[in-house]
Length: 628
Image 1 (cartoon, helix red, strand yellow):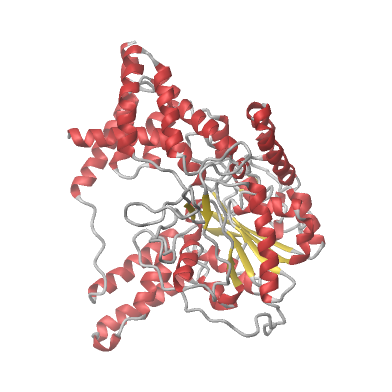
Image 2: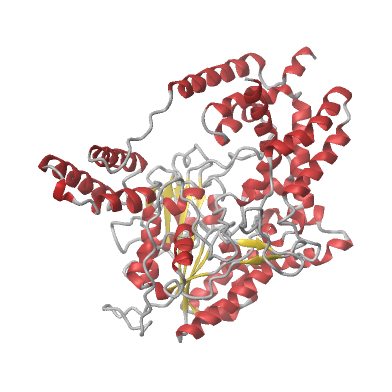
């Protein structure tokens, strides 16, 4: 029990210190590390086996028109935050390796136990002797240590040398290891099958690097792909943070419009994120119910989240809030402020507040100049898109909504989001009711988009939450209800739709295919489609009984029917997955899902009930506050 409590305390303190960092880059692939003499290997996908990438196939004629006259241009994917691998370099420019001979990647360098023991003394002094300065100093030292591989200087350049792993060749011309890494990051298997691997390119960049430098690199990469493939245009697919790079690209390099055929945004942070604004504001949520009841169980699975609700009360409320604010301030001042690529996540309407508070000193002049330039590009995003459309570029957008923003920032519930990016940002201006609410009675759609083909069409979502007519791209934006930003790549409908738009002109807008109406649903079918179904289709049925054959075929048919229905939600995905697993288990190809241990169930309900009772009796206080 003592060891368990120590671990819980360590986790709590790690959460307090690392959450602000982790949520800046949540949603990306944490990447993989390899021995230096090997190609980079794929990331793990939640414990499931990932389908092998198709073998490289290079075609002689890359741009022959398809049967309907469509010219297949190559597509460049611009991924989201932490979806590019960045390796640390030593003083000689060589890639650093750890004791196991694996590359050391840029990213948070954290040890929960180390953090715990580093804080014991300062925390004791703060609680007993009210010496908060020592604790704040310890927090600064820990944040500096955790972020050492990600920080930048006051010119917006890396302090520690790091190298982005690049993919200069097409998917078809990449190594099998590179192919697996690309598909594990962005599972565009459908696009590869439809358009050919020679028409897929993967642009990588340092998520914690320099925004304007990244845009310049993308501009050059577009020219390289055009030259390599002897074509005059490319498609671009900016994902999440990749949309900020697209903002800079359009504004700093307006001539690039002549090089673009289509832009397919996926959950874009086109106007940043309210979550990022909360981090730059560096003030933790003051709502007691969120702090003592809701936050930790939403972040930590199982009974531990509720147990931490009890542990966190060890600190007096004011001390706890002081620590959390100090963590956010330290992360902001020691890490965020000099990272121009993360400044790009500040919403346009919040930028001047943070600029005037953080960037007005003389030593921040270079950073200020660069963030001002991005602020201009961000402000011009609507005008730039319309200018590109006038030049013949076609824009599409796939967005998520209906998921609360992480509630450690104040006012987390005053907007709708996908957990990380608020809907106004992702949809280029669509209007939505705050999370958990619906549009008011008698609401009339705004019809403010200049690209509405039919003003009499109903652009309001079936759940009466979203008014798509207010979004700039009203006729070419699709909405996925209750889809979490981090799990977007696991939604097979999003991937299928994006792949179809990239590889043909079959879908020009929300009216093109009744199979893909404007409002769709969130789901996670990636493992079902590429692991379970693949395994089922490869079964040698020659040794099965007739009854087993019939059961297997029935399960396969049901899975395929659900996968073919874009409106089948997660409940349907889970149902057919469970049925197929049971059939495969009956014939001995997979193990049956492990049942939750009785001990875990008891612990879950014990700590949940105890947490609820404690909140009801103690309220929004720490244990020490009761004596006061």
